[in-house]
Length: 135
Image (tube, rainbow, N blue to C red; front, side):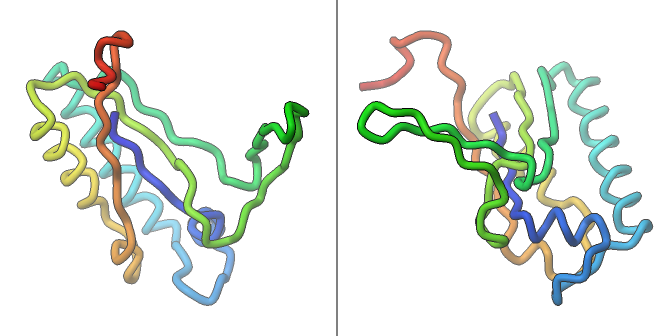
């Protein structure tokens, strides 16, 4: 699984809101969508793409936890700059190295300004059973 991250501030900028950093234009958004569509199509054609989804902005998040056994709910947003899961790709490929190559390719997505400066993705194997935990 390839996991990508963003903050509420990132989502705000993509929607055109002035955050004092970079403001995405319609052209920037179109370039990002075109790139993602192309990469996803390549992964489909190679048979490696199992599923991919983008997630709604953190402002639409609800976190459920427990204190002393009592459930509690916190609605988003979190701190503007706190990164949260923004989307994921589930790929079935020959190796962990290949998944890393795919993540690196996704990292080539065109973004305005210096948005790439702090962008990253995590690559994590999906366990098929408890035996895969590796303890």
